[in-house]
Length: 296
Image (cartoon, one colour):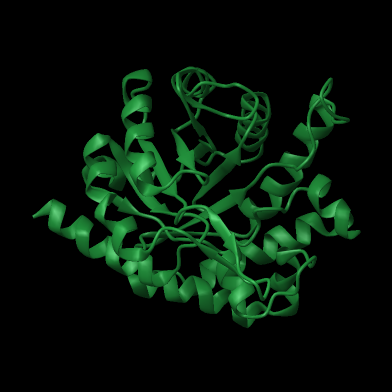
């Protein structure tokens, strides 16, 4: 079992990378194109982004495979290439990983709801995640990162599918909104309930990513901490997206304000900390500095 990343997280704060999609779009990824296609069509660009995050101080990067399930790739007519695209994603990240650094296999939501809210059966979803996990595992990832999950049922299915493919640690993060009664997914899954359920199901680390600002993430981590003994993962957005007049998208939380709250995220109990939408290597470089200051 490749547990070195988790061993490191128990010894000190682990720094993850930031957004992949934001960086791909900044380099010209056309709207509507599956980002995973660039693993084979523009591998130099994907590798450059991974290398930039490692150079900024990231201990681990996530593969360009967020939408890599056959279910999600079907929207682009690429479902038959799921294994190939995930394999390429893992190999690309592995190829630029310095010694002692790690690669997490990104497994995002399938993009369709389970029955009865949507068309997916549990069996079909499990098969889709297993196909993705096979490509990532064969490509050499150190851990699976089941991320940005909005339905605890789906997160549990992805967790079990990944565990059934390879003896690798599985980190699971859900995306929570802030409500008067606390932190909940759009499906109504509370943060503490979700963390406890994932621990019982065999997750190796749990946490939250996306949606929340870094200030909100600190409070979310504090809500998660009493519910589980597992290492906690926290990857906040750089605020909410704002569409400019020219159609470009920026995020509302500037770097200085984002980083100001990272010590609070760590003190609340997060062992693995990185960025999500709107963050880039500059954010990770600044986070590396403040995390180092927290250590000393």
